[in-house]
Image (cartoon, rainbow over all chains, first blue to last red; front, side, top):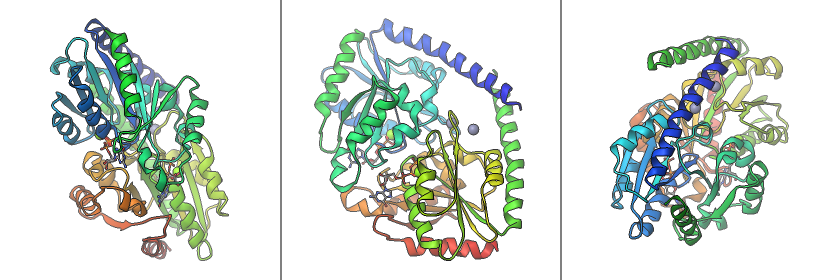
Length: 221
Length: 221
Ligand SMILES: Nc1nc2c(ncn2[C@@H]2O[C@H](COP(=O)(O)OP(=O)(O)OP(=O)(O)O)[C@@H](O)[C@H]2O)c(=O)[nH]1
Ligand SMILES: Nc1nc2c(ncn2[C@@H]2O[C@H](COP(=O)(O)OP(=O)(O)OP(=O)(O)O)[C@@H](O)[C@H]2O)c(=O)[nH]1
Ligand SMILES: [Mg+2]
Ligand SMILES: [Mg+2]
Ligand SMILES: [Zn+2]
Ligand SMILES: [Zn+2]
């Protein structure tokens, strides 16, 4: 297959995805739902963070979760243990969620008016960057165990995100990671990127992160 | 585009890749080169491990490195600082190395007879699994910071690998990670998988890992 033909196919896939994403976005807006798309490397702490966040938010707002993984329903089960409804999408060979999958998930999942929808993407710092799911924003999670250079080496994802959560900061005393440098690199590829340093283990930064979510919820109403 | 057409396109891409991989494999065999394809999530410690490994092996064997990253030449520069030649491939939007790229890299890179070739793939636990580069084997690196469940949740990569390096074991005292469980999960998807626990920081497991490489080098001669 020629390079030109490949580029054409990719463009077709993305433009079809964008049409589905626009439909999702409209449906979510009509219900006043605030939807976030959580993207990161595998194991940066997405599900652990979601579970704690739901625990702290569920008394005030209805929350629903869409979980994307190649295999297993482990993450959806962890979410359901918090009491929130969760729908698992298994992508099989696939490396990212797309807007069509999310549209079908929205048909099955009970998403209430004026609620929070958390979409955990497949752990992959590359491919999900290109796929709009209809979310209000992408939240990229970078664990301090991954090294400062990731924003420069995987720039598309950091450019696509609205917020970066620098996660697992409780481990900083045991690492050589320079958090200021990581933030500087991230803002070099995306000057408008907001940043919050968090640890789900210690709770550090959670007040700030939850306030950020609540601001989004209020704006989406 | 129909699902059927998509599957057909993917099959075409993979079969073309396999043809290039076969050419690479033959060229490497003729020179007695032992080639490894290092695959993992972003930041599991591939480059750090390669730098230390080269430091310990270079007195005995010639080593060359191909580095795959979306952007920057940081990893190739880190390798060159050890004295080994390194060629950087930037994949841009691409999420994995393919055999065609590696074939061109082999034209440019000085790969000596009876030497070691280390190919560091783009940090991505999904997409590189499907792409044979012509290597003797894939080495998957799983950092203990990523959680035990990764082999079950991202099974293709652990199935495709010959060896798993469980990395950053120096951090175990600060984590809740159960290393035995991680190994059990990895062997559940790939019963033949070899496993070595390593820390590049402390040097734990390095004697075993380097002995594994030397066995491969001897067999490739
Ligand atoms: N030290 C520390 N470990 C954490 C923290 N958050 C999560 N972890 C650990 O990180 C590992 C991965 O956590 P997960 O929540 O499964 O990560 P994930 O991003 O959902 O992983 P995938 O969905 O598989 O990509 C687990 O071993 C967690 O216990 C944190 O704040 N501090
Ligand atoms: N504690 C500890 N940290 C390590 C170890 N090996 C690497 N690191 C740290 O892990 C981070 C990532 O290391 P890299 O070697 O850049 O990882 P990588 O897999 O090459 O990353 P990419 O090529 O960007 O996917 C850095 O901050 C390293 O210092 C180790 O054995 N122990
Ligand atoms: Mg998860
Ligand atoms: Mg690297
Ligand atoms: Zn991909
Ligand atoms: Zn590709």
